[in-house]
Image (cartoon, rainbow, N blue to C red; front, top):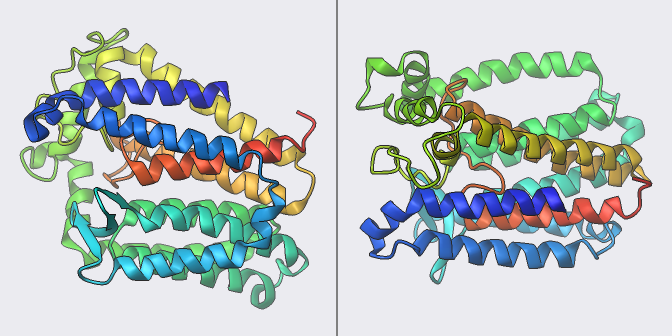
Length: 354
């Protein structure tokens, strides 16, 4: 709980620091983004505290219904006039002044259903037809709908998280090797089918080849992290947030944190994430039954994979994917669903010995 609130506080503070220039320019209100983030964080914390008192077995009872609702939302977002386009992806459904991102709901919904399914049919998991294939078809159906938006980053997090769950449930390595070969071909096909994805790959390999185009984001991100040095330029003193790094309060918030708080600040955040993941794995190992173990593992894997991908993008280890940093990045759907997920994890921890 302490780690969660620590990350939340750092997130709210950094959303303010990274966004007040953009907020003042776009909305004539330097507090626009941080006020909304406080609302999202407050709503999420209330939901987390409520959910942590709901027995985790409740989610098993409603797993099918939850998954059905998530699939309905994924279909709805693809309908013109209902789905909203942001950043080139039709990933949002507007509700009044706010909007939701159905793919975020799908991540948690699929983790709950898959944990229930794998726990129930775990004895068949070594069988390709009875155990492995049904799970994989479900995972890639959800992935396919997310890719129609398109949203490769969220789709990657979903697939990798579910693969961890299926592997831990006891699936054979030979099945994964075959799937990996097909997945590699499919992944290359996805990249080749969209010119902007090819551009992201080439920009990753040499961003200075097109510094004002496809390489712009990663170059500006590195220009933020580099000058931060050991201790940073000081809170509020970032230069890259002055219209150099696009929308720095979302996917690239870690770059601003590195610029202002330096290597020490970035290391503190990474240590907090590592503590959270360690405690999550401990909860999974000590959980009282297969459903709880797989559910806890799915939640902590989702957080770990998403954080690793986001930070790797920001420091230039992998191409730009466009996913948020858990607890820190600005965003209502992402932050609220993450806190709801952690609420389930906290409830499972009540039934463990740790």
